[in-house]
Length: 156
Ligand SMILES: [Zn+2]
Ligand SMILES: [Zn+2]
Ligand SMILES: [Zn+2]
View 1 (cartoon, rainbow, N blue to C red):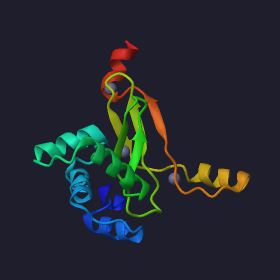
View 2 (cartoon, rainbow, N blue to C red):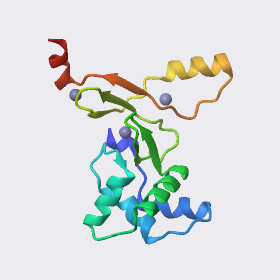
View 3 (tube, rainbow, N blue to C red):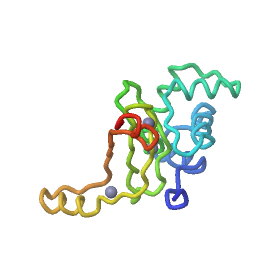
């Protein structure tokens, strides 16, 4: 699954930044590196990125981290996700814009976020396009419920 996803890499960052006349700074590089190094399926808040940078002896200040994750989101390098807990989180985007955003399954009990890679929305996307003339570029789908560990507990 991960090979089809082709997430953003460091070399893509330089290109994206210069396209938009932004400079590669040590801050931007190290912030992206945190995401590259993080486990697949991690969704990090700006605070978590800040803490991970501190562990690596980088103290850029929380405001700088906030600003730069937002910028990386605007540039399409990070994808901002909101799981409804009042805290924005970020994950690496797919480098290929043809690949739509994976779906998120949110467990209401243990708060675990599970990624679901298969799009499965082609029929719906075609239907919407035909009906409304809307060109769909991407989507954000969240499913709320109970994960396989929690469902037994809530069902009994
Ligand atoms: Zn899709
Ligand atoms: Zn759960
Ligand atoms: Zn995700």
